Image (cartoon, rainbow, N blue to C red):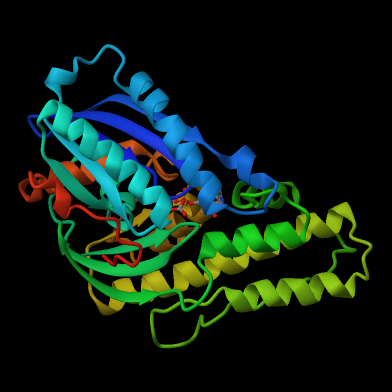
Length: 341
Ligand code: KG4
Ligand code: ZN
């Protein structure tokens, strides 16, 4: 079976083609056109510009992604229907519908958050992994949910305000870093090493000891703002390095603490991570180390870095596992901005 996955929920126009055969996946193509440069001027994603770019990029990305693959070999189309920026979602959905009509194919509507997690199954689900606890950490979402099996989920916590990635992007902006600041914060934090004259920055770990599984990163952003104000406009390079390190660590500490507490309480056999922030090397390493020390029987999975950011392959994987839900009545497929898992 060959599945084509289309993703346009935010600022990446992405199409991936995936082959599924005998419980093995083979990636035939994975094309991502990023709009990052365009949105940098605005310090974040500007929805109507993003919509226009998707419209422009989709035919080009499709051409590249299907080069050398006869269109008649495609069996199924998967498209992200939400959550995301509605005008952007519609671009992908309408493109998928036109293609489906032309090739007489059904469409599987895909949930972006589920896709961020299911891309971990590019190696196919193994034995004894359920129940699992899933953590999506992206620019738009911080969501913790239980997975009894593929398709059966229960949300246990989510952010009450800013998402973790959003917090990194906004605090990075306060430090003068361009959008998206997450990867830049990681680079700067790597350069930091403790010196005697360190600035002694200490940021809060919001909600870390609360007995629920929700998150709140807006307070962290405010704390960074007040810290920076103390510098009275003269921000030294060393200060930015220390701040980057501390912001990154504050986010990682909260994510690990709450996820591991959930893993214990719900007695899960594995943890699945996904979303753009999971590309962060420190987050990956610290999750692994902590689990090895505290819950050595727990398995942990994260996608390869290229599949942490938004991509079409994750949509194709998700569509494959939900292939029985494929729709032939295309008018029923709509963008859903407030879609939950
Ligand atoms: O999943 P994603 O590509 O898009 C959404 O669905 O939102 O996530 C984008 C987010 C941005 O906030 C970006 O700053 C963050 O992921 N990000 C990172 C890293 N790479 C991307 N955050 C921390 N470290 C990274 N290496
Ligand atoms: Zn995403």
